[in-house]
Each structure stands twice: as structure tokens, then as C-alpha cells.
Length: 572
Image (tube, rainbow, N blue to C red; front, side):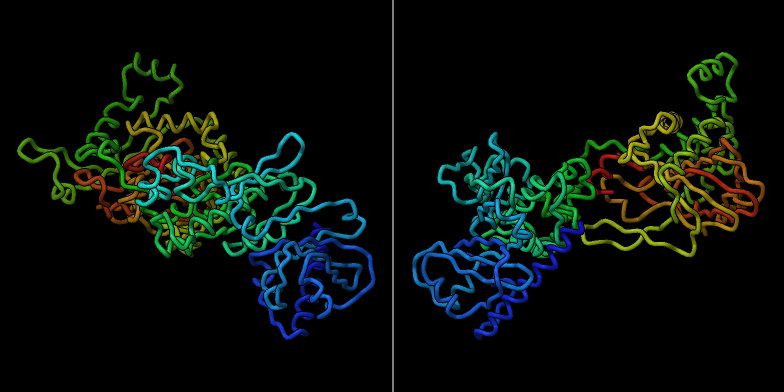
């Protein structure tokens, strides 16, 4: 890093001197003037004497040959003109290709450089390393032998399939999607074009880091990005159906996007990469939420049907292991399930035979369910989950914030919530932990709703004085998303608390408070029995301040549809 930063500083000196010399000739170049199509040049650095960039030196560049620009600090630039036609000075400056700083003379004396022309570099598609250690890069649009793999490619491209079905089209309909290529050799040892590509890719978001062991593959991603953005996303005659707003929002939002893409994160972490590193992943179309997250099909299986909520709670209360006969208790115990008992804190009255069983009017006339399970978790399980929280790091809890550019929502700290939490996520492997997985399955067996509908455990820690003011777990914008809304909360108490820390439901009649006990769980609905997509606002609740001791707990929020699949695509 020290060498790289020093090199960049020296390079800025060279660029500054060059711009100053050009202004002395009556020319005021914009930075982009140093990178535009026409000829190709080569640059090296030697320890020669200082000299100025003079009009006579430029005149020598009107034909083939070499012109040298020397600058203080042992830096020298030599530009080699490839074309033979005489070129006016202003045109020469406007067509200058690259100014590439390579290091000190001692480091560059043995190096040879192959530069792309601007037209080539802006359309580089794929790069591989051959047996001779040379990098072979495909240059889009230059291969006369490139053909489509299907007779309907042109028709599909005209109707936006290059965007809608990019995984297939960009591989099998390359000509119609304008991503054809031919092979060009580039030295593995020196990336003379790197600085140019770094500058080009800055048009599409954060400057990209191209260093380290993955330098070759990262540079290949940058080349591919420039081609994709120039020839596909921003094409004068686009074959995609992206809106102008989506195209403008397509940016690399982190300096490591190209590196992450190079090591496979576009495939491993699409929820983040597809939108936050869209140019590097060639996934600009997925910034549009409707494209990324189409509506569920009619075959999607809901967690609860109308009437299913009351039926589920009735079954749980009736079949709690602690209330079963001895033979049934032993069977459950052999399977590793604790012999928990259930306490009903709130419930609707049984439905009279003369009334309709499923009715919104009845839902609102009768109190909602709230039940507690004692001995639902073992002591060892509680301690293990607490330690997972420490392993993955407790941090200040956050509420749902504002909607972002890609339809997702960020988080925000709130004065109404002072607890700390960690996530036992599928992404970092915590969800696959043996104990965490076993508890997820126990929750699924208890409710009859598949574990895929559950969010990752949110592991909570409340110190003395910490609280979470009255709120509801239902999140409105999730109602029409692929995961559906939160329909139930399964809250797990992992520790005893000496004083305070209860879970209070102020809108129930009468209000109820359930206090922490190690191994206890609490289950309540967020939706109506008759309309399981719509909120039951009466189940607002709050975490009362801890007065003495520390409260450890875990949230398990249950959704109407498959949450894990939706979350993996950034659709939750």
C-alpha cells in the first residue's frame, strides 16, 4: 500500500505537469481528453534530465516515431505515435490515449507493455490466462465470426430479453446483445492499461481497487464492466428495457466491487452484489425491484390459510408435550424435545356452532392469541445461543429505515430502542450451527410452518436500563413482497432476569406482561385469522426496561411465504 500510494502521488505530479504544459500551448484539456479513441501510445519512466513539453516536441508527433516528456523526480514519458497521417496539434491532444505511471526506472527497465486502443479497452469482455502466462482478453464487437446460438436471438433481443433473461442471452445470443469478442494478448507482468481502465470504470461508481493476489481476475472484471456499461447499458441503440432511472442508478457502490465479483460474490451473495455492485456483476436490470423480485406464482404455499391461525394455536395448546400421557412424553423425550408446557395468556373464545368460524368481525371482537411455553429450550441450548451472539458480535439494535435506490430498506438507530443484537444468519453459517438448526426445526414442528419461512435468529442483549418501546412486528411493505409479511413472532428467553425486562402487551384487555425465564418461549400473531396478510394491530408490545441483571433473548419472526429464498435475492 505504501508503494501504491506513493506511485499515485507521483503520477498526479506528471498529470499536473502535462496539463500545465498543454495550457502553455493555449489548450485547456479536460481529464477525459486524455482518454479518447484513435491512436495508441506507450509510456516508460527513466532517470533522464528535466525538459518541458514544447511545441516542437509535439510537432515531432505528427508522424510515426517517439516523443519524450521529461519531468522532475526522475520521471520521463515517452509517447509513440502509431498512425502515419499528419495530425493537427489539437486533434493529437484530443486523441491521446493513456498516461500510465509504471514506477521507477529500475523497476520498468525490463518491462514491455501492450496497450489497448481506447475502442478495444472500452469493450473488453472476458479475460483468461493461457499456458504461456499471457492474458487473452475478448474485445467486444470486433469478431466477424461471432454468431447467435439460436435463430430467435434477434427477435428476443429486440423485445428486451438481453435484460430480462441475461444469464442465457449474454452467453447464447452475443451478437444480438452486442457482446461479441475477439482475442487480444496482454502481458501478464505489466498492466499498462490498468490506469486507463481504473479511470474509465470511475464513470460507473466508486474507484476500484485492482491489487493483490487477485489482480489479474479483478482487472478482467473491470474490463468486462466497462464493456457492459458502454456497449449494453448506455448503448445508443439499447437492446435492453431498463428505464433511464435504473441505468443511472447502476453504480459500483464500493471500491471492492470488482474484487468481490472476481472471487465469485455475485453468485454467492446476490442479495447485496446484484444491486450494490451491479456494473461488476452485469446486473443493472436487477436494480428495478419489479424485475428482481417478480410476484409469486399461484403455486406459492402460504404459511397460514384463512382460519389456519386459530386452528394452529388450538392444536399447540392441546398437544403440548407436558400435558401428554407418559408413553407420548417418553417418545418426545427420546427425540430430544423438551417436555414443555403451555400457558395461555390471551385467546379468542371458542366459536359457537351458530357462528361463522372464519370472520373478520369475529376476529376483531375477540382477543388475539398469546401463549407461553415453559421448558421449551434446555439450559445448554440457551447458553449455546448466547455464546453465538458474542461470537457474531452484539451491536446497537436498529429499526427499519428509509427505502433505498433498489427498493430495499436501510436501518436506523432509534431512541425508542436501546438494546443490542447480533444475527445468527444463513450467510455466515450460524444458522447451520447444530443447536441453532435444531431449534429452528423445533419451532417449525411446533407451528407446522416450514423453517424456510423463518428469518434468521435475532439474538438480543438488554443491560440494566435498556428497553424497546411499544411497536408492532408487522412490516407493511413486506405484504406484497415474495416473502409476505411477518405473521407470527416466536420469542425465546435465554436467561433469567432478577428484575424487570418483561414483554408487555398494552393493548390487550386486560394488558398482560410475560417475564423472562431461561428456556421460556412466547408466541403471538401479527396478523388476523381471517386475513393472514393483514395486521392485527392489537398485538403491539414492548420490552420493559431491565432493572437488575442482563436479559438475553432471541426473536424468530415467521413469514407467510419462503423468507430465505426471497432474502437471498434481496427481495425481503
